Length: 336
Image 1 (cartoon, rainbow, N blue to C red):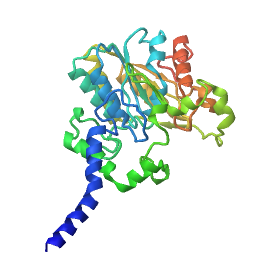
Image 2 (image 1 turned 180 degrees about the vertical axis):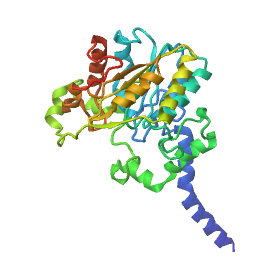
Image 3 (image 1 turned 90 degrees about the vertical axis):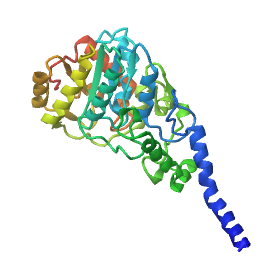
């Protein structure tokens, strides 16, 4: 009996030991950077951008300009916005975006900012056909879990999602072998150590940008070939979506902020319809609305794109300069 107990104990140690070690490592090293800001360090774990920016916002003081958006807004930099004469000139800006963020997340952040009693002067809300949605994306799924400060999940539920992912043997294999073929969110295909991060503004330069000569249009023009570009398609915003926008705007206006909505370009040529822009202008009369989704100088040039979904920072600078010069006008349908 004693020998049997010893064998069972040894077997239990062999089975449970690696998991115990991983739990300890998870708690001590914080591999997903859930508690640390700035977060970008050497490693290939998928970092939750929404957690990153929420931690950054809570640690930043004296902010008076905010950018809200999904992953496509990353290339519209705070420094470029505040350097222009468009709205936020000379202000302290923070890029409060998240991967896959949408109207639901924007409203969450507006409430958080209001409850933090932070006085914001200018808010830039980036919209497209995906960020106009009002349902949360994967609120209990890795890696889109939202920070517990929003009270959508308890702190225990929040950490358990990441810990469950970390303990998954397939995830550990993918991470250690840098095998990105097992699934989109298993492991990043680059190290965050290769990125440049601005802890003050929340902006960061992706590893892809670091691999090429900065702002070199010719690199992607010569090395990236797109298939035939799709035809233009138009989307609208329904009553619930416009009401969600109105609520977000109202929350910001209650603390003295002026809101601007910018529809940014997409290589897929998706555009807000004229009817949608007209309804927004009528129902959000205090908001500046700019449609840059038809900005063909960017859309028609592969050199301005990482791939079909994300344009590069040089294109973001062009958008701000076009607004500043009047090439992109507020409340005007920017069709060719």
